[in-house]
Image 1 (cartoon, one colour):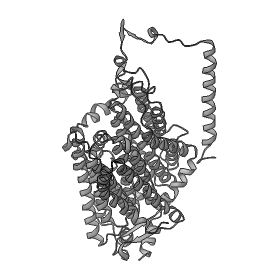
Image 2 (spheres, chains in turn green, cyan):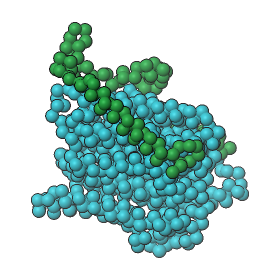
Image 3 (tube, chains in turn blue, brown):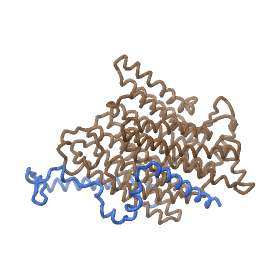
Image 4 (cartoon, rainbow over the protein chains, first blue to last red):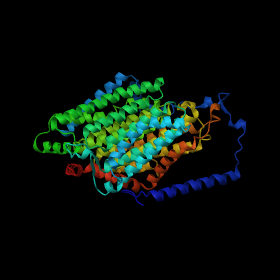
Length: 111
Length: 503
């Protein structure tokens, strides 16, 4: 079944993806014939700077997870994000500003 | 069609709202407290059946006009059901049914559940009223019923965060509904009618015979701002992250799937039908892009899963506005298809978040990890929802986003389309972060004993995930579902003729 313009056929694409998953899984199974993972307790431990860390301590900081993307959009995170202060009066001001922007846009469009 | 289906759709949840406490008392007396919860589930499913019974007639091209008290329009109040509001009614009824099933277990640890279910039914009645009415003052009244019940639901748990979020939502939401009322007052003053079809026709006549009165842009701006607050269009979005984070997850799912859909519907009905304002499509495109980008970038840096989902919800509204803003057949189809899909995967994702909160007690991403081993079904369903919302093929989000991209290219807006594609990649990025932090990696000690979510919570999630797959693999099915709605958006005169002809 084709969908919209172009060559995207969702059913064919799905079948191909499922086949890809099946092939990948078979490769994984085949590879285990040669190398069997044997995780020992020592292997599962996390070492950093000579210290053994607990699972709770190796958690990635969720806010800094994409710090490179944050650097790309630095102006947004420097000026817009801090404006989300949680202060109600600020948010009401945003509504007023939003209303004025919408009014001007409509007046220009319907002119 | 079931006789009196349009009015039954509204009256049924209203009666159920006031019957629920009585059913609760009786059920408690007989030691079967869950009978109250199942009563609400039954009402929601019955409502879905009633809405579905209108499908053959409406998809056959008919506009169902139900005259209340036998009074003819424009003097009497009518309910007018066309392809657009039928689609929205189906979404509301479906979401409410699944949320009601989910709530049976999810809300069992809370007290005061009579109030919860009463409010749930009132939100439903208000949403259905806004959707089906053909009278703009009625629309305002039902909008208030829906909104006030939502404020109370957000503050349902009565802890500091939820009360604060509820008060913020109340103040900003009340400002929005005040703007709506002001606009309706101006409309009535200018035209002297409250029937939407009559208003639309008289506005067409005014535009044909004289220069557009200066008050018309003001009325439209007031309406768009009022509804814009409900759909959390940037910069009117500030209430939403706090509200969705603080509310019980079942409520967040309901608000993201049902009330936001109603907000989009009302905005479309008003701007496209009442004002015939395809001319303001560019405004929707620009606001849609700002909403999409700001929501996405804010979602990227959130520490709390529910807050991340809330900002993601804002971002997805941008796609819908972008699609309908293009104003072409394919653009509106894409926007409405995305509206349907958004209701499906956003409800699914909030339910998954709720399952985690139910088992772990927190939605803070920094306190989670390795839960894929403990909650494999929830993890799989979350991944399905996350990939769907990110527009990864072959899931439903891809189908609707792709329709919007194609519409954008056909409408000569390659830059807008490129921004939408980039934001889709960003959506995938922040959902991969959430998947990594919650389900992968090393499992902290305190999460070792966490169990899978209960089956009754998993059931609605499984159904929603199945819809994500079905509408992705068979996108033609989704497009067929939204085509009558798109036809209704673009056929202003058909709606006016059907409603006024009923007089």
